[in-house]
Length: 561
Image 1 (cartoon, rainbow, N blue to C red):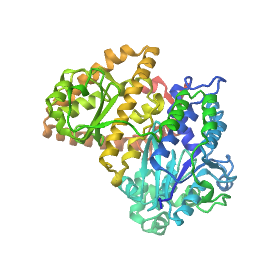
Image 2 (image 1 turned 45 degrees about the vertical axis):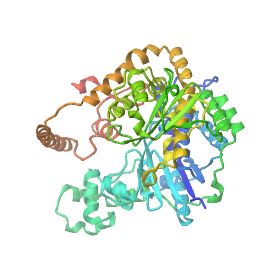
Image 3 (image 1 turned 135 degrees about the vertical axis):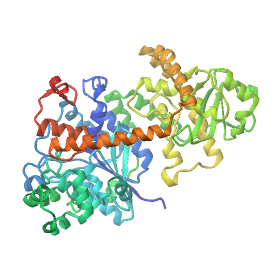
């Protein structure tokens, strides 16, 4: 029996992240009725990525029901002072819910409770039923729910990059347990949720206190033994506030929800209704991908597994893909490669063929059509091959057309092609379960990648031409990739001892400046966090702000001098 997997998504948080991930392209994402669609589109891309990667048997998207909750009854200023939700985002919310309906994904909200509480309650119920649970949010509050059976993924960048928190990773990253994560928030407070915390206690001091005393309760049990200090004074004065903050920060895992795990079974989308929704939103490429996946998902690909290369297998129009088992093309293993010739597809895992005179001569003398030329040139240099500048790089072409999504071949397939292709994480697995399948399945996957590259080349070229970007590809990006690859191969000579000396000197300077900043600020905070820095500069120190249409604060010029 397949393992039961529950995927729980903090819908409000993830949709908000999706909106701002594509905010710079706000005007591009409008349908024929003038509706902004960037949050809908970004949210959908996140869902697609998660569905392919997690492969859930059950799924729920939880939303906040409103501003009034049991927490605001406890503390009226909870989440007070938040900026007004942009109208361009607000108008998209009903359509995000409609999208979920068409995808066959249950969504739910509960009066007086937050999405976090729904997620926490269902997550704990699922654990008791032996589910593996994945929680996804843009809000770190949910990290407190991670345990042996639950991983919490926090969106980091764009619509497909997440940081996965397990108890082990949390300990490695911050040195605390999930329970202590709640206590840390009780001590630090949270400006975004308007949780007060204890005056002038930041992350560094909070973690130090928790490591010494174990918990918030432990801190106050031992407070009489602490040396007299401003910190002790603040802890004593803000004791009631600290425990209130802990209550506010603690997710309710026993919320009175009216749905159960059986209501969350995922069986896939209503393809007909989803297609109509794509038409309404103007998502032409998603509609094309939907049609392609339905037509080709079960098709077997015709290709040849190669043990020997002959001249009739190669032509000037051949498109190559070199498969790396890992992310680092300087060190990770090349595990196979595939290419096209006319209407035929070839794939092999026989790396010794790279030394075959016929293939080696072709690769070194022919400007290649290839996916990710820079990677290919550096990678093949390890096998003694010296590639010429490329004729066409599919990865660079996709990158020029859109930086919203990742640049995997599976993404190119879904956006511009008709051939069905699973993403690499789904195909190979991840973590300790990552593995290359049996030979024929593996080589078919490589051949299918090349089929996508063959199919999408004219589409990519047409769209680049429409955008006036062909010269940018041929005269700038591809020549630059060639130069960068040569630079990476050549490397630079460095004197290790000098670098270590510079590192030590810089660390001393950084530590000195950090302490000076803390003294000027009157508290410790994460200097590398734009959010925390902004709160300090604009809220505490009261520096004047110039607001722009972009979602950010701008320090007036006089403060930059």
